[in-house]
Image 1 (cartoon, rainbow, N blue to C red):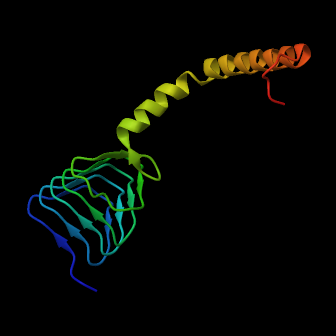
Image 2: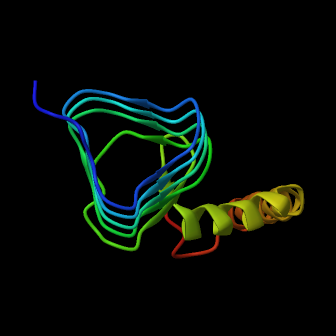
Length: 135
């Protein structure tokens, strides 16, 4: 097991668990109740929210932001990445998903209507036996 390094300017909140052989880069901030598993390398200037779980043996790029209650299960290789959720995924994608989710009941109604229209058209084509329609 290697040494654990907490670099210059790191800010740690309360109730954080940092395992063996972890390297936390300069000026990184970690909020309460976060756990960092062994042999993880966290880059410089990262922001990690509260109650985040980070698996071991991964690397987190510089300037990465991880929202509270997220679970990070793989390395982050691109700097300036924002993540959320468990398992963690891109924050911008999460915002788009939430916008779609709010419209889900209306989208379901529209899809049902379109399915009925396609079924009606298909029945009409079968009934009239229009040339060129494959069976």
